[in-house]
Image 1 (cartoon, rainbow, N blue to C red):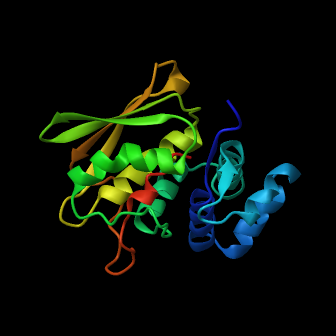
Image 2 (spheres, one colour):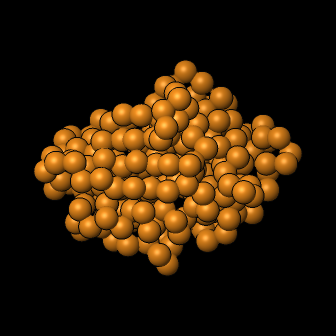
Image 3 (cartoon, rainbow, N blue to C red):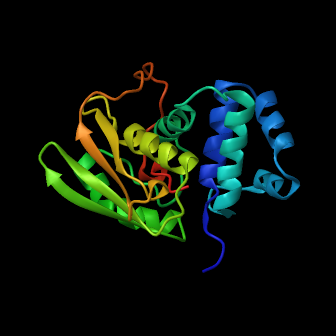
Length: 204
């Protein structure tokens, strides 16, 4: 297996989050604090590929520099990505959460070259997402939880995502339960969010 990679859209979404929630100067400070080999991230484009390790390094450095005491930093970054997503040709507007979840595995394979996402119908109240063979870490896991919640939390049907298992704790796969319930996040102000798309289901 080569170096695990994800689409550059996830790099740019992280950049956007830091610039909007902190400042462009804060983003520049994070880039400056990265090891030299990681700064190539600045050349990322939506459809290009970026090493997963570099994407995780930017997120870890951003938290260390900007919010070292914030336990929900990665999840907030994910929620932002879910509600303010850059467009890709493969992006699919979401009008039906069930359809969005069914298409999740296909979108995962388009946006990541490692791992698999499985959607398991659990009950009328929700569904289980299970991720296998992906090098998990806190920046990935918490960011992905927020991404799913952000992209599926439409005004008419908010969702809450709860982590049930994670390979970083020794479990055989990562698993989360997606339920119809108010999100843990504050609702967006009217007009603040662009149309969510499946591209925000960030596997990196």
